[in-house]
Structures are given as C-alpha cells and as structure tokens.
Amino acid sequence: MIHTLEPILREHPFFQGMEDRHIQLIAGCSMNVRFEAGQVIFHEGDPADHFYLIREGLVSIQLAIPHRGLTTVQTVGGGEVMGWSWLFPPYRWHFDARTQEPTHALAFDGKCLRAKCEEDHSLGYDIYKRFMQIVTERLESTRLQLLDMYGNHP
Amino acid sequence: MATILEQPEVVTAGLVPDPMVPMPYRIQRVKQETDDTFTLELLPEDSSKGFSFAPGQFNMLYVFGVGEVPISISSDPDDVPLLKHTTRVVGTVTKAMRQLKRGETMGIRGPFGSHWPVEEATGRDIVIVAGGIGLAPLRPALYRLVAEREKFRKIVLLYGTRTPEDILYRPELEQWRGKFDLEIQVTVDRAASSWRGNVGVVTTMIPRAPFDPTNTVAMVCGPEVMMRFTVMELLKRGVAAELTYLSAERNMKCGIGFCGHCQYGPTFICKDGPVFAFPRVAAILGKSEI
Picture 1 (cartoon, rainbow over the protein chains, first blue to last red):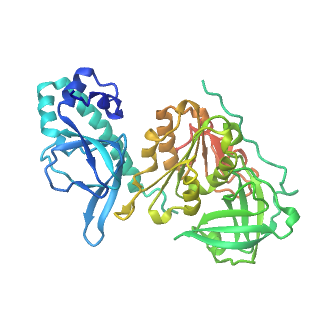
Picture 2 (cartoon, rainbow over the protein chains, first blue to last red):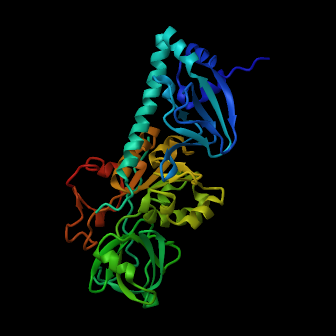
C-alpha cells in the first residue's frame, strides 16, 4: 500500500486552506525526513535545493562569525517552515542549519516544485504568497531583535 | 463574546495610614540576578507593620538621602511581610540601592496601583508573555497561579530576553517547568551555539503556544515596543482584546495620583494602572510623547 503525504501536508499550518489539487501537486515533490540531534541539515554556500516543514523538533539557524564562532540567529520548531533560498537564484543557503534535538520534517525538492510552479502559475502564486508571509514575519522579528528591546536604554 | 473582566481594584487593606510616609524596612538579602539586575529582599523593622499586596502592584522604594523610585513587587503574595523587588541599575537611586548591604534600612511606601486579574481568570486558559525584566512584576501572579493551580485551565508562560545569561529567576522557572502542569517556553534574542533553547523574539512563540484563544486571559509585561507587538500577535491568534492585560510603566513620583508625573493620556499609571485591560490604553499605546 502506498502512503501519501497529502494528509500530513493538509494538517501543517503552512498549507492551511490550500486547494486539494495544489496539495496533490506538492505532495509529489515531498518526502518524510528525520534528523538526529546535532546533525547539520545544510551549510552556508551549499546548493539550496530543498525547503523543510518542521513537524517536530528544533533547528538552529547559525552563522559562523570570525573570532566569535557559531552564533545562532534563530531557531525553527514544530509547525514552522525552514528555508526559502530555493526560491531565488543563485539557489544557495545563506546560513547553516543544525538540529538541536531529534527532528522530524517534510523535505520538499525545490527544483521539482519550481518546475511545477512554472507549469501552473496559480500554484506558483499560492506558494509565493505563503512564503512572502513567512518572509514578512521573519523580517519583523529580525527588526525587533535588532532593536535590542531588553537592553538598558536610558 | 468576551466580557471585560472587572477592572482590578487597589488593595487598601494594608495601606499605611499616610501613603506619603515611608515605612522602614530592613534588607535581608541582596541577590545579583544577572549582570545588571538585582533583587532586594526586605522585612519591616516593625513586624506588625507589614502589608498584603496583589500581584502586579508596586511600591515606592526610598534610599535615604538619595531618592525614591517605583518598583514592582516580585515576591510571593502569600509570603508577606517579606517583600522582594527586582530592578536594574539604571539611575542614581538604583545605583545607590545596589550598594546597600544586608541589615541596612530603606523606606517603603505602598502597595500602589491595580493588579493582574488572577482571580478573575478562574476557569480560563492563561498566557503570560514577559520580556526581559518584565518577568519581575509577573512573578507574584505566577506564584498565585501555581498555588491555586486547580482553578485554571492551561497556564503558559512565554518569556523572551536578550541572552541566556539574562534569564531571570532561572531556578524557579526550571522548578515550575518540572511540575509538568505549566507550559514554560523561553527564547533569547541571540545566543552562542552552546545554547540549546529557542532563539528569536518572544512574539514568534505566540502562534503555536498551546492555549485556547477563545477562552484565554493574557497578561503581558515588558518594554513597550515588545508589548505592542505581543498584543498584535495575541489579537491575531484570537485572544479577546478585553481579556488582554498589560502593565505600563512611566515616571511615577507620588504613587497616588497627586503629582501628575505619570499621566498617560487620560489616566495616571500609578493610580489607574500599572495594569490595564488593553482597550483602555489601545488608543495611546505606541504614541510618542505621551
């Protein structure tokens, strides 16, 4: 019996409200993945050929800074999306991703999905809208982090 | 439809006869909490002169010969007459306060202001969102919630701070988390790779936090900008504005609404606040020069 990932996709907050035919198209580019704690999922500069929907676990988005070592700039947990570098040229990761704990995720083949988006622009529009929402939220969070809200500001 | 909970009233039972006269309190302990934050533990010199307080209220702390500052009470409301005040070294008075030693005396006036709607939240989920030292005014509410745990449904604490080293009350947070009937999530703005917890602003935890937004009371305390974005996220999640409470902070001097230093639009923070239901301050929250 073939198990499809469609039910899992439908349950994930990122795909909430998506049309069934789009879910079916996307499911064809997805697979279940599991990472051990401390495992590197991707490295800065590597080809960004996937994105991930985290189902369970915690992943650190990190940057290596000279003389400071690895710095975590964000963590991504269950129900969240990780990675949008697959959407835009040059399709390379800008950060490292390392699991903090055992992590279950759905991995999506970026090339496969880009091709489907080119074939079906309504799918592409839907996907890009959803990613824009994520990008907007991350930008807002980053701005708040930059404010150093909890610092001592007379 | 949600109803506005009764606006918390000032507890006056233990108020000193003249609210402008400080009572002498002796320092029992000075505890360094983080790099720039410390807690004073105080008992009244006359043990019969202690007072009760409600979570969220504040006292005016007087360093003799230096000055007076308003600081929220951060101790257990069921552990009176002991008072704990956590503050950061930011100005002349708090600098002098940090130099005080065990056994020295300072003046206290209070308690002043409104309080968190702990009793009124019976039967509901409770989400507490704290930022930085904003956890201090919420700690008495947490003590009360833990003590009366059976009265409430889910209790969730979302706490954001700068770095792992800036986490306040770490032993208590660990102890409460270990009780398994409180959901405690901590996040920091930045961290070295050795930190195994969340990194990101506290608002990012709200969409996935385990509470039922249709039956939740929210209590929020932190820097004003953090509270603005937190309230936006809570409302987006579906928490009723009327059930969303925040603690405002201004330059309070007299503590009883006489001097006008803490005027915040049509309200005085010291008398009408510091704890407000969101609709009461929605129009002025975030406006500069208020």
